[in-house]
Amino acid sequence: MAQAVEEWYEHMPIITRSYLTAAIVTTIGCSLEIISPYNLYLNPKFVVKQYEFWRLITNFFYFRKMGIPLCKGIP
Image (cartoon, rainbow, N blue to C red):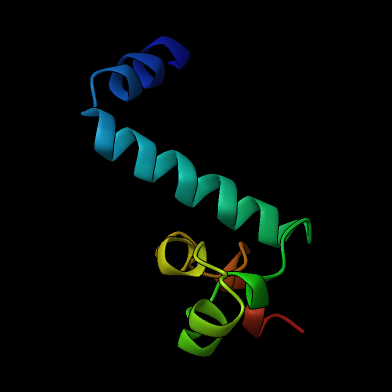
């Protein structure tokens, strides 16, 4: 099974593979509180006045914290 995942990942186009890797790393980093989501969102004021140019790209990588949404209804 691991070989199939590795082959699937290696046969992806480089842009798709790079985006998928960045999205997974960013989401896991935010879930483990290594990266704050507030440092990733797009705020034009910070981009123009504080030169935080990474915000132009990183806002596409973070989706939300990882979790199991099925457990929300369990008391």
